[in-house]
Image (cartoon, rainbow, N blue to C red; front, side):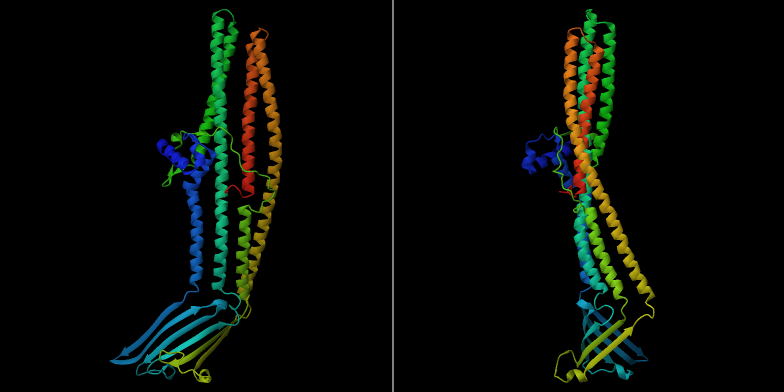
Length: 462
């Protein structure tokens, strides 16, 4: 597994010149994001959204596809053909609910109703179905096509939302891993220093230069540093487990955390500049725009159902298969088929209820949109205020660290002159370690704050 990871890092190193100068055992922030982009299953899922949008668009366009049908009906009894009907027909849906149709009908048999009798060579018809009431301004075919177009636009934003969330969570995992690795290193170095001091104190005691109490003081310091180091190691391992959730190999093969023998980059990650005081590009918020547009089309369709059904059917008839043969100015008057269908419910109760429901859906979505917008705006202001406070804290902590470093160095000088004790040295050192750990943790908070700013403004996916 480790060889696979290192091989993967080698591939990424050669794939980009910027990676080539980095040790392959170092998993940089840039490489980490690159691996996620290439192999994380969620990225594959986001691509399926676009494929689904294309499939939905094909479905909607299919409603305007020409359709062929063939009807055949025959009855034979006691050796006699009562009737035989055959009608091939082609229909072409058009915009505004219209539909063109053309057919050729034949009828044979001994017992044909007079209305069903046709010329021997058959009867051709070219006609138009035209809705004059319900379906003229909006129908199900046009609604589905427009909704499919909206879904296609929304799918791109949904992709951004998924990647935005994924990269934000991945960034926090990497920052935690890097933080606990640094803290673990800090206490490992402190443990090594405590062990060196303990051995020196023991030698001093053996030579009569140090009292026995100093050896106990030095030993307790070693034990404390061992506890600090072990605790930091546990937290570093936990952060590494969390990090492994975002690392995948080709073929949807997950990375085993125990085999993840790579180190974080030494410098802290630096998200992009974050002072963009707008959440307008947040994909979660943008999706409401598409949802409202979709609901508006649904509302128009429901409002259209309040119109009565008035369908006009016009057909031009001709013998044989030539529908436009022998045409002249008077031909239509003598060879036509006209139909008119009018229907409507007396109260439109169902239709009015459906329209009212669609209006309620729009209002509900608008309320939800306003709630989400307000939540994101408040979080962005809060994030900005926190950013300024963390920067101020970092400045104070760095100054405090420098001061405690000087205090420790001064205490060590006093100790060498016999004017101080090992207890005071350990106290100064413990306080300095506490400040250093606080500095690392505050830097981690600042990085997470900047990552959160990217997420709020929809730029984590960039």
